Length: 173
Image 1: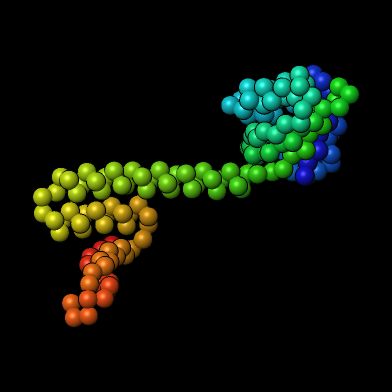
Image 2 (image 1 turned 180 degrees about the vertical axis):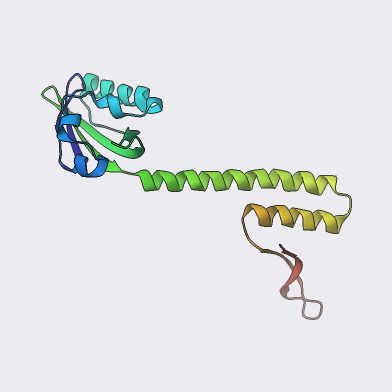
């Protein structure tokens, strides 16, 4: 956890030593600078709105933003903010790895959804059924980055009539 103390105008008055370790910033660089100086430009309005609401309402709040390190790169931080006697106290947790995981999962989901659209178009546009299936499996295998795709079919067993499963199609890259 990283701890900050701000005055009512947003100037840093206290920074725990852990800030130096995490961000490579000296106490001199941190103290008396404005909190927003190191907040990513895309996150400044949301951050400002949250802190203004905190000052106005006096109710604890939480928010996330990207905060700049000494080397210029950014880390995602989840903040808990509270106000007491005209001082704002913030506790931050580094959630960069979580955010990167979320972004990766969203990108994978987006690629998968795009592949479903491509598969649908391919199936509708290809007159030969087996070519359409093989093309669709090729798109799916490529998008999910596998070298084999199998399609199984449930059907009644021809002799016992019990539910059986058979491999109907195989695609190999």
